[in-house]
Image (tube, rainbow, N blue to C red; front, side, top):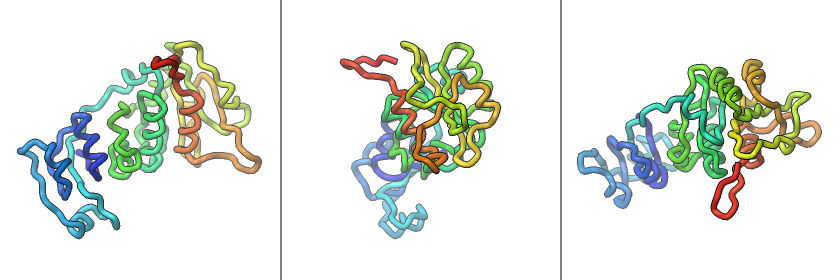
Length: 236
């Protein structure tokens, strides 16, 4: 199961077809969308603060059943996907989700050590946009990335290492699928994932600065490699 907090996130979970189990709330508008079989408890601010563990409790907290897992290899077939390795901070995961969804990307792949997009903090940071971006956890992210590259996807490994090309120089072919691969802030990507990529790219930065926050770097790269929308159509 997962926990959704706030009327916006809970509403988006319901819009996505997620099944609620119970809730503590003082927001009748959202609660009225629940099936009568769902247990809903009225809770004032002090009860919600104690139950949610937050200094500023939101107006509703609801427990949902997790959706069925998505197959990682199938998800990697999408036109624009982000892959994360060892990005375990839920704030970073939620921010990556929010940026990717906003910029037209349509899939998120995670290795076994990355954070959960449905974690409470990740959902709050993403503003519920997790439900607009399909995600999957791969048993072997290297295998998924390698398979994507071999079928023609442009796999862009983001790294500040010497020899990487400037991000703005990465030019996908017309209609070519793109996969952006990012690693943890301290260690970066593993050698295996770097070797699996099509190209290594870096974000040019001021002297003396060697890297950006993982979520900030993802936002920059998602914008640079985003689908281009012209007259209501998407051109890759």
